[in-house]
Length: 427
Image (tube, rainbow, N blue to C red; front, side, top):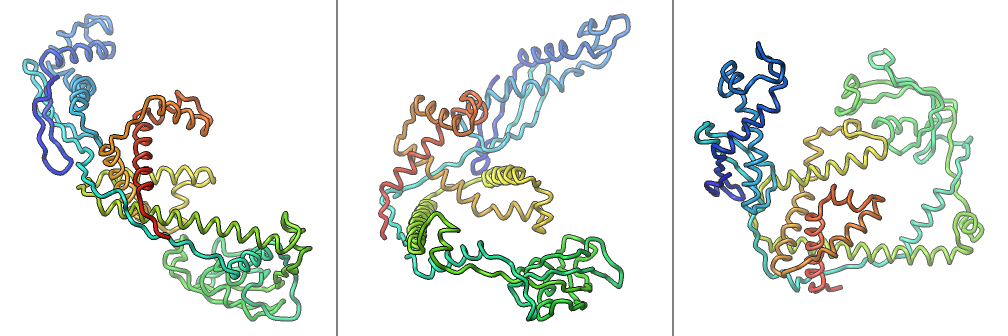
């Protein structure tokens, strides 16, 4: 194997010329012949016993070339790429430029690598941190939500339906006078004002009384998931069977005892205030960190290849698919429900992906500038923590993640600590 030349062709892209000599090519051809001869029939020879020269005479001297060249990609090209010490961020583009039994095989390989990064003034970054005060109104909203969760539905007899009520209805939908599939149900409990049904549907129930039978007209949204109804005007025949409203419990110590772990309303309010203040402090801390990293990005100078952003989006999409599967859903179903295609879904991650890539590059460079060292013992300790967290063996974690990646993450974490510890946070 020989790395003949390395030429930078554009930002973070290099073209390598790699040559496998005649000896390496001959070895690859011979190994291909040994692997393949069992599948080749030659008259006068038992299957798998025909000499290589005989096969080459029958099928051409280059009969084994393609598989041999492919084998050289692993045995010759991959080591040559590794010898450059470049950190690839995409699969290399490999092209064969010449194949000759006497001269060997020449490859042209285009690699995309991590860009050169410059960063300065990353210590002492000034950030404003704002902790929002917890008000009595915040507490009241928490209390009201607790009452709502513990409310009970009671039947209303003496008035018309209002927003916030639950209307128990029979309904059937028609398009051009013909009932359509999925448009019928009985004793369906519809929360008025929830926006559960087609726009305009719930509003036309408001004002009706128990026992009323009536027709409402709606137009389905243009992006409705059932194509035959999308954008189409339809009518629904409705019977209002019952009106229910939520009756909230009295706000007193007895309610608090029944609904919570506390004995009095004051105890509950004090606990709510404490938790809201803790949440406000955590939120402020997260916002300050976000501002810090945004400022760090502003100090970054790097011409980042688009493929790095795409790789990060790929990773985010895979993580999202895993979370969906844990809920019993798949991506196709999710996209149908949200009226999105995959391109739009991927684009929704674009800004976040770009930020994460830039922050990572900045912190990796800072780790270099600060000569951050991570010991093998620290890597092993981190792998053992991950093994315990995911209930896997340490060897399994190593096979999935890799010690090199764990070491890189620990260096980045230390660089992040350096930036945070030196930051001047006001507020």
